[in-house]
Length: 495
Image (cartoon, rainbow, N blue to C red; front, side):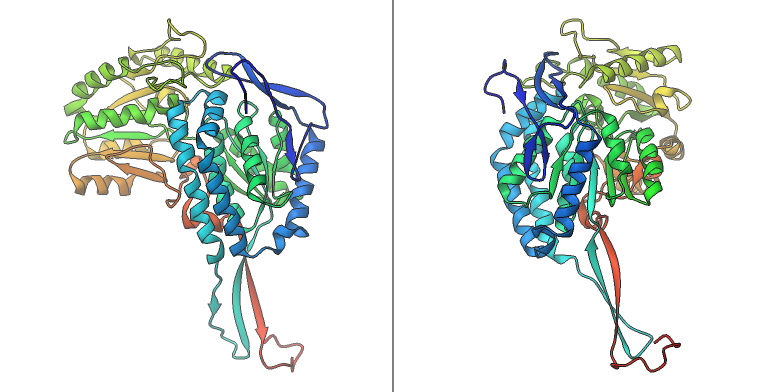
């Protein structure tokens, strides 16, 4: 880590248990979104680096000590890693906040919670049991084994680099897989810092490898014939390209993609609580989260009341230095994303949405700071209601009754998350069951757990992360037939 805010930290790739420069000899700067200045350098890798990392991961899986470890031994290493992360949570949170501009206090809470993923899956490592299958052939005993898939290529985004990596890493390591990680070129540092802790925990060389560089590095990883699975979090458009490329080698994929998640407020909801939840759902993390509640659906009977309170509270959100405790919203993470957010504000105005508050770069802070923005008089025919912005923009949509609310909520190509705000528990469950989304909150928003499966319907992804379901995503099922009589009496008759 850095000794002072003025120094530039220098990082190398992490391959086969060693930090090293890229074969390309190039580096790239990581910019602090708050100051707009570089604070670290990481290698700008090439195909040779991808090949070296995959070879290290393959050797560790096929012939290294990792493949000979028992599941219980793998669990011990995962638990030790969790302890190390808990010890260093403050340092790692500061690193990630500096890399992507998210609030330090949010990052600290996130890093303090991350060890639980490793503890949970440490306990699950030796619970991957097969089945004994009743045989229709009396001279055969049949059972199944769950075996690790092999080498996993993990491609992670810039908004929550290590949290979204750990969704993949903890179950994958518990299952016995090895990893090559390609983090976003905007936020690679925290993943390289994680590599140091994995080495300290005692994981064998080659089990965890990190390659950094531009997006082409990820494409090379997807196309590599020795990669058994790609686990990706990011934009739906990129996920589609990954799925198409991976099909060339029949590489398995799990994809956690975009969302346009509806937050549904009924007239009988506790309005202040619902508005607070809506604000947390869209302006938390500066709206740069796949599960952002970017569509606020409000029953017409309370529409004006909700909008008035929402606008009042939104105008009070404190923007500023993400390292300061009083800051409630930080900057946009990088320049390309800033331009995308500003373009959507322009589009929303052109399509006739009403700007209720925000809508511009903050005049006092400038740089990457966009004011938290609320648009009203929105309908699902507008791009602001159908396309993922990934920024602090909320589209407020009125509805007449429960049936219309469900129809509007489901009228999207996405299906990652949703929320229902109502004090009528019958209605809350009834609506939750009708929503086509992988996660539905009732009177809450933006809560995840290591124990609860996370993923999307429709174009929000393939597969699930977290919980018991996720570890199965990193295994193959093998059926074993054991002949019991001791002799094959008729070679042309099976069984």
